[in-house]
Image (cartoon, rainbow, N blue to C red; front, side, top):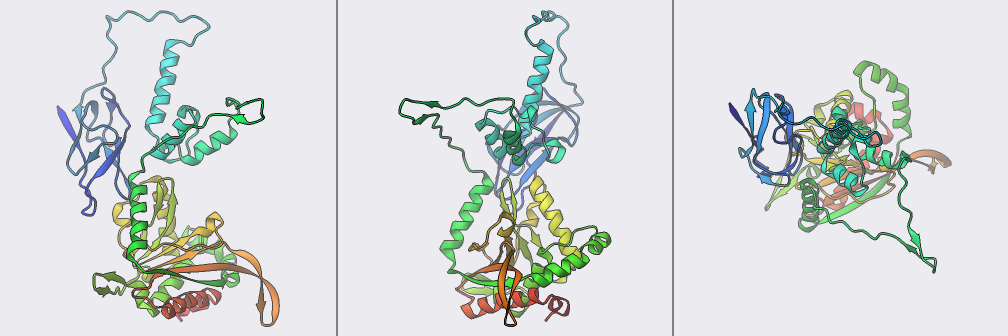
Amino acid sequence: MATEVKVPQLPESVADATLVSWHKKPGDAVRRDENLVDLETDKVVLEVPCPTDGVLKEIKAEDGATVTSGELLAVVEAGAAAPAPSASEPAAEVAPSDSPAPAAAATAASSSDSAHDKLSPSVRRLVEEHDLDPARIQGSGRDGRITKGDVMNHLENDDGEAEDMPVVNGGGAVVGARNEQRVPMTRLRATIAKRMVEAQQNAAMLTTFNEVDLTEVIALRARYKDQFAEKHGVKLGFMSFFVKAAVEALRKFPLVNASVDGNDILYHDYQDIGIAVSTERGLMVPVLRDAGLKSFAQIEQEIADYGKRAREGSIGIEELTGGTFTITNGGIFGSMMSTPILNPPQSGILGMHAILDRPVAVDGEIKIRKMMYLAMSYDHRIIDGKEAVQFVVSIKQALEDPARLLLQL
C-alpha cells in the first residue's frame, strides 16, 4: 500500500519552507519515524519523519525546492522490502589483487554517500570546498552528525593528504588558484539579513554605554556554584544574573519593554527575554517566557536547554517568536565593545562583553577589578536618552550589589 509523505503543518507566521536535503534515495528501505528529509524555514530546520516501514518509492520534490503546508514530498510503499539483486545476474568477477574489491569499494562509496546526505547545508559547502570525504570525519553532533567544528578540526589535524603546493614563478610571486564560489544564502541567513536591515531602516536606533564591576557577582558565583550545581543539576552562569537584573530594570522603565505598533505604543506587563544563541546556521534568539517569575535555577536550565537544542536544530519555531527584550553576549567570542542591533519589534537590546581585569578607582584607591562594558541599543522614537541611561545604570547597580536582585531593589 502506498503512503504519502507530506509537508507538516507550518506555523501561521511561516508561509513556506525550503527542502534542504533528502536522507534517502528512491528504492532505499525506510523505517517508521526515521528522518527522511530536512525542511528549512525562516527560523528553524524541520525534520519530516517516515510514516511507516517500507521502501521509498518516489520523491516528488527535489533539494532546493520551495514547499508549503500539506504539499506532497514523497511516496512510501508500506510493508515492502528493499529490492534484492536478481539471482539471474552474473556473478561479479574477482578483482585483481592490486585494486580494491568491488564489495569494499561499494561499501566505502555507500558510507561516503550516507555521510554526505546527513550534512547540513553549511557543513556540506565546507566539505565540498575542501574536497573532503565525509566518511573520514568524526561527527560529534546528534546521531553522529558532522558539525562545522568537526570539519575545521579535521582540516587542522589531518596530515594524511598533502595539498598541492602553489607554484612560484621566476619573479618570486606565488602563482596559485584564485577560486571563487557563489553560494545562496540559507533561509535563516536571508531572514536575519532582512530583519537587520529593517531594524536600521524602521527604528531611530541609538546606543548608550556603561561599565559594570562584576567582582561581587564572580565572588558570589564562585562561593555557591558547586552547591547550586549539586542541587539543581545545572551550572550557575552569568546570564541568570543579567536576566534578573534586566527584569528589575524593565519593571522600573516599562517603555524599554514596550514596542511601537503603528502610531501606538504597546506596553507589556510581562518580561519575555530573548537570549541570542550562535549556531552553525546563524543567530537564533529563543525566548524565556515570563522571566520575571523564574528562579535563577529555572533560568539557567532553560538557557542550557535552548542552547543545546538550537545548535542541534531541534528547537521549535514557537520558542523563537515573541519576546519583549533581548540580551546578547559577544563576550564569549572575546568582544570588548559592540553596538547590538535591535530585534524588531522590540525597543531595546542589551549587549554583554568580555570580562577583563582593569585598574579601577575604588574609595580613593586603585584596585584591579573584574570589569565589563555594557551596551544598550534602543529605539529613540519612544525611549529618551535619560530613560535609556537610567535603565543601564539600574542593571549596573544590581550587578555590582547582587543583594539587590534578591530584595528586588
